[in-house]
Image (cartoon, rainbow, N blue to C red):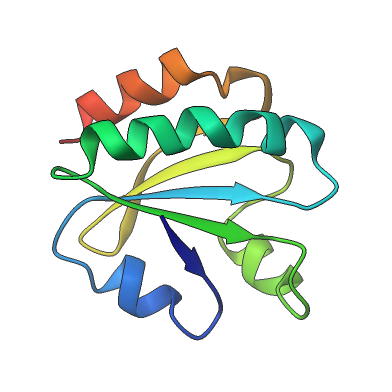
Length: 107
């Protein structure tokens, strides 16, 4: 999985020709950390069809960026296609099964 920053977000997500999954997580989010192994398993399984990335919302100077992308609570898993967010699962709905269903809808 590619670790996203403000510097590489456009290149990895917005300008990517493949669908892109973004795992928005934070260092103090226990649910995010607990979910990460499941997302990494899905990345191994679906890597040929979708580009897997993760964005640490605990990075410095990313608050406005996260608000711009409507990331208001964690965890959040988003799918982008052609530079646009097309699907998203938030907080309690972030389960491996729901993420896999979302991936299947978008590949």
